[in-house]
Amino acid sequence: MLDNYNSPLNLRLIKKCPVCNTDYQQSMIQVLDESEFGVLTYATCDRCGANLLAKFASMPQGVIGNAILTDLKPQEVMDFATNESISDDDVLDMQYMIGKKELINSLKKLI
Ligand SMILES: [Zn+2]
Image (cartoon, rainbow, N blue to C red):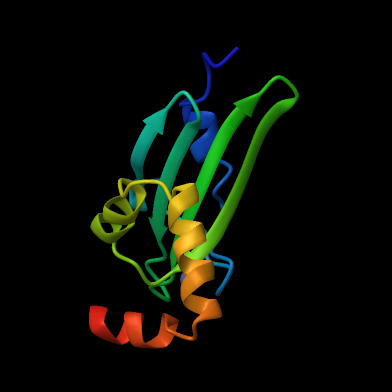
């Protein structure tokens, strides 16, 4: 079922830059990550420099994908992708801080 998730066909779905409508050069598309959940790709437009981050997954119904424009570099994308998941306790801590109006002060300490 997932045998074709990393098919080059998926990369051909990334055709044109959504900003300037220039055709992507296939050599400008990098595969950042592959897993059983799909393929994460990063493409930079050689005309306007916009970066498109796209994820494709092969489902029984066919290939599905979503994409966003980003100003992150490929390494920054991977740094965020490998961070730990948000836990239930993290959400409760955040709610507590918002309730006590401590959230802004806590964020200032991180900067
Ligand atoms: Zn472009």
